[in-house]
Image (tube, rainbow, N blue to C red):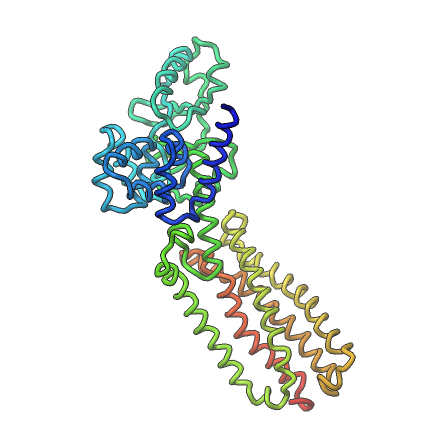
Length: 441
């Protein structure tokens, strides 16, 4: 019996892990083939988008059964995922109490505290004794509550006064009042706080749940750690996709239609393509120099890739530091100074390798001509300058985007690399015209 249970759990785990890779028909077939208890366990373990997909395909009777299994905040997430056309139908399947809670949650944007919170939490009054509170919690725990790690102490008008952990509650004398043992210096989340900011609060505090309050300190609900764990994954996925020069997908890769994928990827590729045309323009501007010293063309990929790699590396570091709150807008000058120095050191290292490559190459005179040292010096200076420029562009562009209220992740590595490519050519040929004047040029 134990082995059979373990095997069932393993099957359910593997099915949940590979769920996103299945087609819609495969999902429906595998889900319908499961026994009811296993289907319930799988359904509750799935992400919101997958739950919404199953509910959309279900019959009216099945929809009622599945939607009533979810907590109010999860129901709100499913409705927001499916869209307004499903709202009335799904709301009609809920019991009156849950319907009121879901209606309240849907009034908030899905990516802020109000949209993430649960309205089911343990409530206590300040004048209760510890004995009364424990008895009351036993009653509340029989209903569906999001978490019972903490009990929140509220006035009659729902003003938040404090919080009591269960450890404090059960270790206190039974005659004591709740107001005597509650903590009043608790951390609260504004109802309109963005989910990224909420994730930062959780990362800084070792807490399982945080209260959500309005501007009058009236408690509206709680946000739990598991809610934020999903948010962190979603935000990280979105940022990674943006760093790849595309719009963030609204669904898992295999569940996104071909047309939607094209729509998400084509615009940025077009922008980058037109930007790369400036590279051709820059090369056309220096075509006389290239025709007079064809050997210069040998080092173009080396020069522009050094700057592009430096810019991409820097932008990735700064965007991540911004996301974690390690870097703020006011730190831009410190970051600029740091990256200019870093760009110089990195550029000097790469440039020295390039210089040595030219100077000590066995067939240097045959390949690079008699002025090979000046050519190597051109490569050295150009690499230093281009890498510094890449570091500046990669570090400052996220600050500019944050300043104008755009997502710094939009400063994607390909975009920075394209920007640096164009300027890299200008720097390279400008240095060449100066160092090789009177010799090769």
